[in-house]
Image (cartoon, rainbow, N blue to C red; front, side):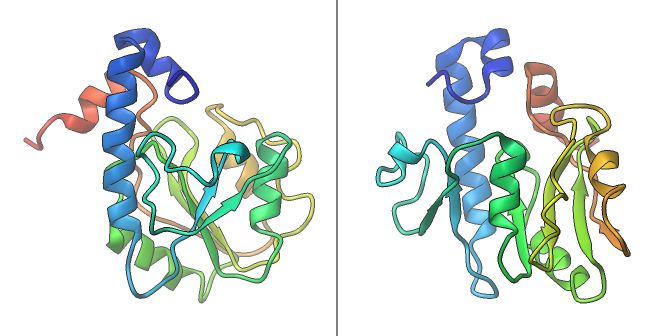
Length: 181
């Protein structure tokens, strides 16, 4: 508690933010598991890798340690091997298996694929690896231009999935939970 969803916790308290985060992760992990691909958790903090992290991480899913460094360094590591590799964050409970299947299909004809987030970032990114070493350098993370920063460094076609809402605060949570009209 206190390591994730800090902006949401500022709005509704740490306990409620932790509950929401657990529920979002459970849904996302269910939607990421499919026989068409291998699902692996890329986890931080490293010292929690052998645990289920308070019941959030499913015991049956293998884990890879993110290791030290900032988000750029950790992202570069996961895409340093042959792909396709797709990374999905834990802030968008609206994503589903069809989104992931569409992303893998897009990587057959595109250099990269992104699931744009309504805040200017992205909820999914995928590449046929290995990715260029400098791809993640000078990226303004958690910024309205994050997706544009990433795309500007990719040579070749990039596919986009549907735009989803990152749940970073209570207003975003309410938008995501609002039933369709």
